[in-house]
Length: 459
Image (cartoon, rainbow, N blue to C red; front, side, top):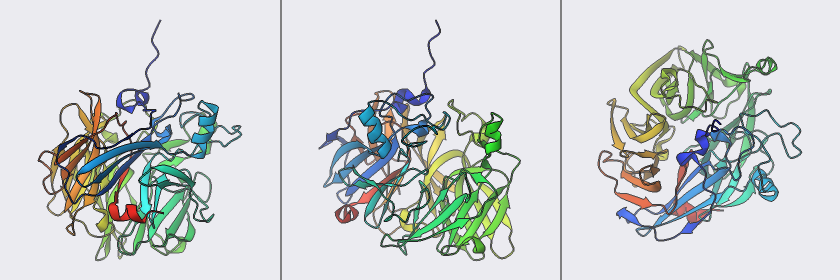
């Protein structure tokens, strides 16, 4: 009898933890800086029940893992994002929805799909939101990590909500978008610094595409119409509805922040896919975009595809000339990297430094710090058998790289997890502190740092 294949997304440190715990006065190796005060929170998929049908990593219920730091001490808690779908399945005591690898459940009496709120987080206008790009955000109470419920801007939210909204550190405005596989394929929205949804406008696209991220500058918003297309005709032939079309050009649309479809300018570049942008800014006549670029992508592969050269993400820079319409694209590094972040206090402005996960064999073995002016980089290595996640930058002062980078790291040798904190100006040294977590933290997606000041102002 042949043993059933183990789903890699339910094995090892991808496997869920089902217990919600609170643990104070955690053990620390090293010393937490006395002026580091706030909360690191990371989101990620963690199925509440045994999945129904084939399981993809993107399917799991959102679970928040938070480390509160204050006065040199740290505490930890993890909580499910109690979405409507989570509550229904909790009551049923089993999975009610299938996932991305299963046909849509049009006959499900609750809905065809479940908003799992498992991807990312954003703090804006006193609210902390858990995000999933196929539906509305969920408002989270901090530092408790309890779920308030869906957040729809007083009913004004009429589209999906990207997992990667952008908050302008100068104006306080937040920009977001929602993509759809039915016309209109893209909606673009602006939220005031006070948290009011000011406007939503449709942006015309030739067809539906998967658009995971975008970027902003001081004056512009940049959309990526990349050839990961959705075609219902393919589905009727038994082919994937969502597919990367390598012969189709990539298009980058640049629109004034408060503009609409009439104001957008489109620039073409060779076919590629971008999961995540690092930053964007204006340089004289040019709009500059920095992002981790792949030649192609296979979203629904359940095996490790890192050995496929086309699926390796690398840091790139595009220059879009707003005067003559030209595009310049260049690779900045041969090393594979993903989950890029900047100091959010400089988002949309010219930046010298960027940080990204160092990729190898499908996992993150360290953090790369890019000096975008010199073209050089430094790496912090997690060590043998240790794998990290997205490194979040935590500002300490006014300097662009004055602060810390932190991320959860899993040690496969010990089957343990910890929060690793590195001095951003001394990346190659040992961590200044390692906060030991009392249970394993599964691999996840995106995190955020909530300063003590923000925690006190939370709504």
